[in-house]
Image 1 (cartoon, each protein chain N blue to C red):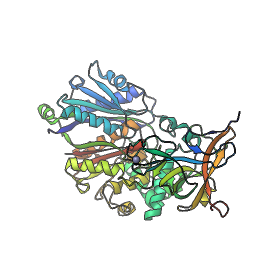
Image 2 (image 1 turned 90 degrees about the vertical axis):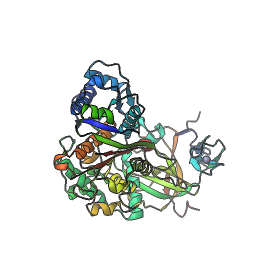
Image 3 (image 1 turned 90 degrees about the horizontal axis):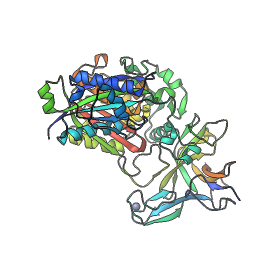
Image 4 (image 1 turned 45 degrees about the vertical axis):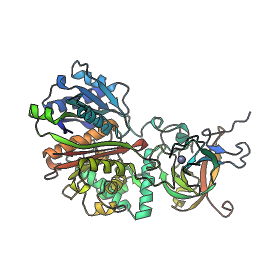
Length: 381
Length: 140
Ligand SMILES: [Zn+2]
């Protein structure tokens, strides 16, 4: 099977803007085309990853780049939408139908908590079970009970990501906070605090994906190989996450991150220890701690030790969320995974500036959200 | 005409008017044995149609919980003005865990504590449910 590579990447900053989805989306797409050195007319298909934008947003946004009759398809899989869209591009190229595909993630979101009717039933909303952080927090409480994970360890993860964000001009918040400030920020849902969760916002990120043959023909600058791109949904009762109203106490299936990562590692022929840098779903700081374990960076229950030992800081053995993560970038749902991919491309090209992980050759992006939708993309230079 | 109705069809059993024997409806799959919340015609684990109704136990234990400190978005029907409340995932002996508000002071809640089902009738006649701390009187 011939390789599929990323030949261009572009991003519109994540944050809150008085701009339309068309403006921020087309900005990121044009930046990706310019980076690739490819004309819009050379692109044969496009996928838009989005959750909250209205129907046919892909066509509305990308028409701005010039007249076209290519297929433009909107893809949605909650927080994993970007992985699902990138996977479609991979299939289109591997099938031989296309040589060059645009994958754009774009979102414009209201401030504050997300509209619960998108995912919850009326009775769940009426009974007070429609606050997404409540689900993350219950996982954290159980982990603290079973493994002795502490509030300080959770705060250290937020501290690391906020610190990293200072060097990312595309993050919504580019501000470092002390551990005291984080631990003194108000509780949202115990034990998770205001400075430990991500906020919904606006943003766009795009990549131009091509066959390795095409990349060679045009002399693409620093193509990055997609070693694996896997999207799954959680197995039966494997993931207590919104909008679940109950879970099995007897079924013991591996969680969505474990399953998706295992498939991605296998397809890439790589293991966790081969990966030099990670961008993962830190919807809240605890979630990142749990993901360390599920991505096999450490055994179950030892995520807290990893942050204590600095393993996941830039300069550590396995840096995680060099970009500042969703905690500082915000989560424009449809754009979040493509934002991770853009960061990893910069890292693997050695162009990440003060966030650079020295000598990074392999990077992994991970997203996880409603319905147990999970995606893992492994990139390699 | 009486106004009492369940917060969701198929979620509660018993007499909602008198409150007698009100509890959670469940279902058990005869093929794989999984118990699930609410009336269910298909097993979400194995897909079997061989599913029988089950009245879920009233008693359970807090498996995990949180305290909701901000008003949940949407048409929340809890205390007005909003008061922080505990939300628990309660493990039942039937083999499943159910998410519900806990009717006690948030600071009283601990993982592993015994709780018991109780219906809550709202002013609009809708019957929802919660779990209360089991005391000598309720946990028989
Ligand atoms: Zn079954």
